[in-house]
Picture 1 (cartoon, helix red, strand yellow):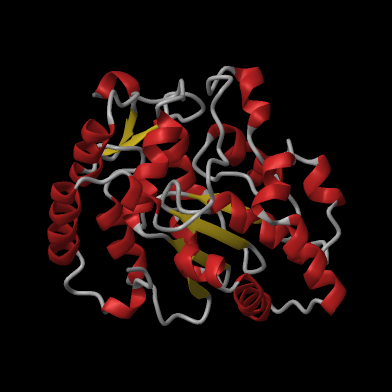
Picture 2 (tube, rainbow, N blue to C red):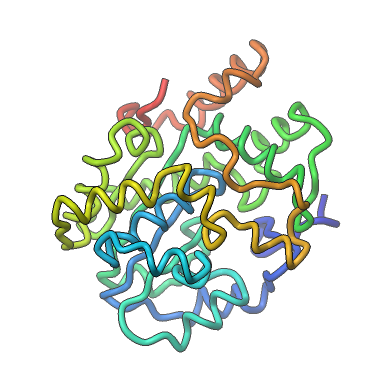
Length: 286
């Protein structure tokens, strides 16, 4: 499988825009500032939705910024070549995105007061979402079937490695005052209350009309229509096929439409084994 991955410290990365030497430099030398905000997820967990929400918190619900600047420029990826190079020289408070496991994140994070938003999602839904997205991508190995991708996922042979290792690693930070755990499921179930919780964590306050504007402009429909957020700009770089959409369904529980009974049972067994040391209430899905 290594022919369609870039490897760094045993973790697979996309083949375009990622260089092991720069990821090593970022891990060892990148400096997090106390006023930075890090948006952290495993792939296909609602990352871009959370980025959009945080951007709209900063702009007080005004959509001009999110409608004029690509999402990866607003909150650059620290592990990607383009993102790392733009973040290094950026002044003032920075929004930073990452899918990195805890052992590869820039070490300076742990000595800073930078605020971390860690968004988790039912891994079954992340698996299904990943299958459909990577099937139309040109920057990683394409799965031939959901059955094949299911096996890759449970083995950790997917971009950024094992969901279980990623989640167990970052959950070790829970309880720290600068680390907020969120779930895609609670964000879907009660977006308004979850956004208010994020505002409180970031020390921001929105007026009722600003919050309403945020909710409207970060909705699935609004993001699907916003070319600065829906990744259709990537068609110009041939990173994804013309018919590929980052915004597919935006729902919870879609895995039930795709898993076989045997797959569901196998996944449950692995989940119970791998996550046995963590409290069940951390995972608010069925």
